[in-house]
Image 1 (cartoon, rainbow, N blue to C red):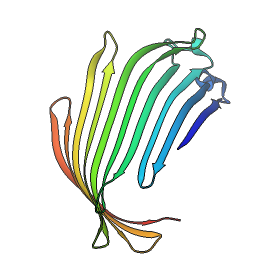
Image 2: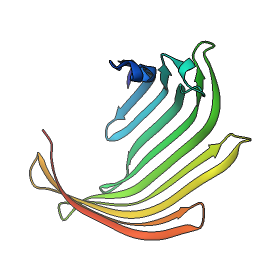
Image 3: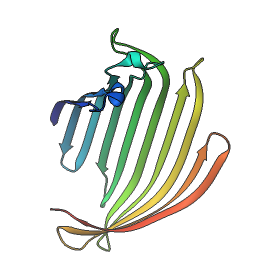
Length: 211
């Protein structure tokens, strides 16, 4: 088992030379704290990652604006990747991702936030794998994606929702220890708030080289 902790920060100051544009001078500060747990036992693998992030944009001369332009975006993210070997070259795979976020006006002097929007993103991807099928690795899976966005003014209500269901097939053929050929095809059913419904197919062919 391997455990990693990481703290990341980014600070960038934009300054306009011309006096008439100096009101747009601003700071962008990003802070992210993340943790990763990587567990392996024989062919079993589990990779879990979680993080919290804050993205601040603060203007140097807020008094020059009628409304406070400074804002902050906050996020919580967690993802999990799981690979479970079965019998006779079969395996199960799973990937899950969850993101919670909110956006709002930032009062830098009081270090307070007024939330005007929030969101949630959820992705689940599960597949059954068969290896060594005429030298091919064959995956048959299903991916489910959901995104929700809420507005908080004048009250919290659901503003937009997107749902996608995607069955897919992926085939991998190793040409040599470093080069692989990959074929992918999927069919997506898309549904969005407002009665938007459609279906579309997607496919690609790729050559992947691993150093």
